[in-house]
Length: 287
Image 1 (cartoon, helix red, strand yellow):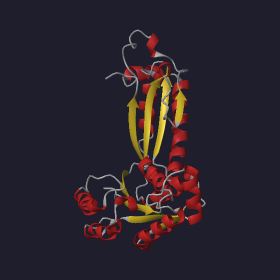
Image 2 (cartoon, one colour):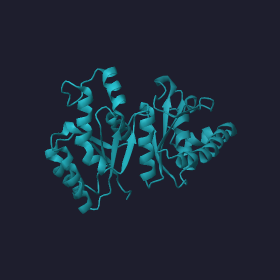
Image 3 (cartoon, helix red, strand yellow):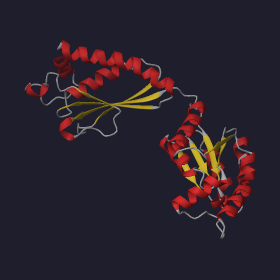
Image 4 (tube, one colour):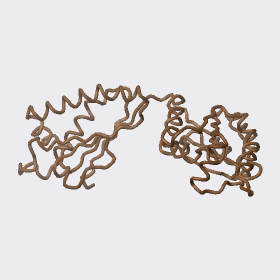
C-alpha cells in the first residue's frame, strides 16, 4: 500500500494559505480549512482510524480556528502515537508585503482592530508556536501564485514514494466534440471505416472482427506502432519529472469503431510499462 501523506498547512493571514490548499486539492488531497480548535483531537483520531482507506489529507489552520488554535501542536501527538507521518508547512511573509496585499485586495485582516500593522504583528506572535514546530517554512513575500503552487507540488513530489503515473486512454467521436481535459488528441479518421461494412456497422471497436478490418491496413497498424513507440519514450520522461496523470484522447467520426479499436490496441501495447496504471474509457459508446 502506498504510504499516505498528511500536511498541516498554516501561516500568516495573507501569506497564501488558500493558494497552497488549492494546489494540494488539485493533487487529489482531501483538504479541510479552518477546523475549529475544539475538534482537533477528534479529527486526528478519525484520521488514525481510517489509515487503511484515507486519501492524502491536508488541514489548514490559522487564527480563524479559534483562540486555542495553537493547541494543535499537542493534538499532533495523536499522529505520533499511531505512527502516521506528517509535515507542518508554515507560510511566512514580510509585514510590508502583507500590508500591500490587504490594501490591494481590500480584504479585512481576520483580527483587525483599527491598525493593520499591529494586527499582523499580533498574528505573528500568536502563530509563533506553530512556526517553532514547522518542518518546512516558505517565505511567500516574492512569490507569485503559480510559484507558490509549484513549491507545494515540489514538496509533494519529494515526499511521494510512488513513481507510478495514471494514464487515461479514451475514445471519442469528433461529431460529439473533443474532450476538453485531454493532454494529447489523436485523429484516426484516416483509417478504413467499418461503418460502411454492413456486417461490421452494428459492432464496436473492441470486437475482433472490427479490429482485424482496421489493422489489416498497413497504414493503420503502422500508425499504432509509431504511437506506441512514441509513448514508450514519452511516459518514462513524465514519470521522471514527477507527473502523476496523463490523458490521451483518440477520435474518429462517431467514436464507435476506429477510435475504440485504437484505444484497445494502444492500451495493450503499453501495458508492460512498470510505471503506469492504465484506464480505458469509451466516451461515446452507450452502455
